[in-house]
Image 1 (cartoon, rainbow, N blue to C red):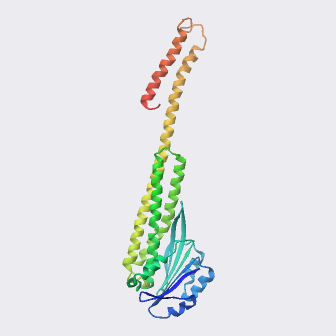
Image 2 (spheres, rainbow, N blue to C red):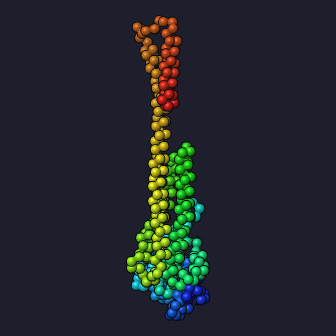
Image 3 (cartoon, helix red, strand yellow):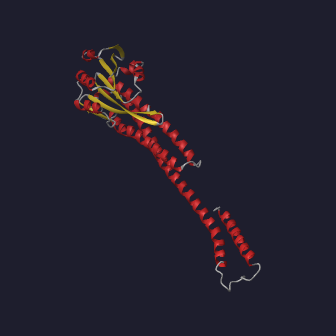
Length: 321
């Protein structure tokens, strides 16, 4: 679906144009066209390929989708793949944005994502002095918007992890805590897959040899790179925290099992002593001590009670009961 198709000149919007007018404006000096598509069909991609003369390999990647975040050069064209990560309830929804950037055009194709980039277009139009840089600045603005949207997702994951950590020490279900921690770890991995490859790719757009489209915008792409570095460092730290929380949860399970084992051993000892004494006196031999003694039976019961009381106090002092 065609979202919008706009032509710009000298940093200012000239007009919204029809799809069949694109080629005419591409031929005008100082103009560039910015087209946005959503969930584009094969026919729409074919039409844009003819209008912008897109490279067949980049179009093939956009057509099939599910690509790894990357930035590739095809002559004067830059093909960018970005993952859009959105928090939908307790789930993370991963979409994809493919951006074709040439000297006088930008074509963005977003798939499987609800949040658009109308705000990015409005921002660029409010900054004509920067929009004069042309399509390269639009590429930066789109990348910056996608990367900035990762931070709220990261905050959501951190908040979820903090809640789980509180539950670990609140005697809640250990199995539920482990499942929740693995779920958080899965979210961290999902966000990591979106940011780590992109960080390596963005590093090619500033410093040293850069594509002609991005010339003069090194500080802007470096800013995106800095945000990605911060994100990846936070994700690495978060992943370590999740692993530590898992180990703590398992350690607390082990401690709990040890406490149960000690209690069972203590109760077993309390039962074993009377059982032993009763077993000795129940053998019915003729020459057993106290067999004919009138106080023999009370003595045996009292001995059981005294020994159990002593054992109970010792176990209680040791913390087993």
